[in-house]
Length: 276
Image 1 (spheres, helix red, strand yellow):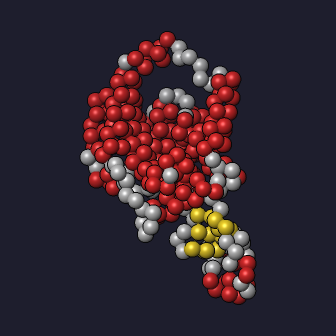
Image 2 (cartoon, one colour; image 1 turned 90 degrees about the horizontal axis):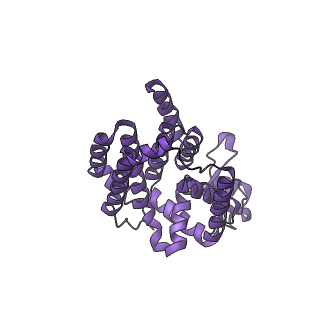
Image 3 (spheres, one colour; image 1 turned 180 degrees about the horizontal axis):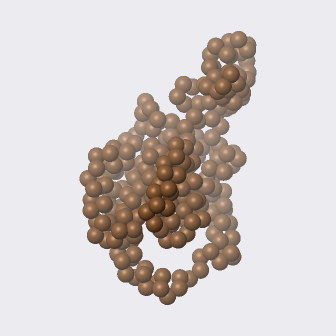
């Protein structure tokens, strides 16, 4: 839940232009108090507590260990501050967010150009030439040809986490979102495998992921895939626990991390319904 609350609050604060560690802490604390007042974090009943002390607790230990190992294996992250394609945009957007509190990147050039020149320099990516318009190819979009700011063209969730890390430890810590996200991804997948199929499946699942080159690769580049994995499989964990609201929140955040994930999420839920 902490991951979900922090991510949601971070995106909303960034959209509002008031992102900061203080604002994030206040928002998180407020949600926590509301949840406590609403009784959403009630003590478990005896049967649930008994299950938690048995297989579920063992699975949790294995999943946490796998996540920590994945984090250590993919450390240090590549410093993609420049010429790192998509990863550079995610890292730099987070650093900008930490410094300014907003996704918006100010600019004064577009409004000084004639409409014909602006149209030639900033092509539209929308229908009928209505925008948004490309301010920086592959990086920034403007809402109009005379806009005074542009926003990152990539998904908004990962810059929140690169921004949090940049605010905590400076710009050099922003790429650490890569191993952090991969650690959470491996943890979530292992947890699902264990709770759905037992400890005997959790162990080889963790080993397969830890031995996968793609895990090592994406765990060193700040990309949106690891966080997407964490949210989707975390949502399936909640679904297996009989918590559809929590599952919906996690799966929805997976869609914020990568929009096309919503398609795969629908397919996963259909499979789940057929399987159960």
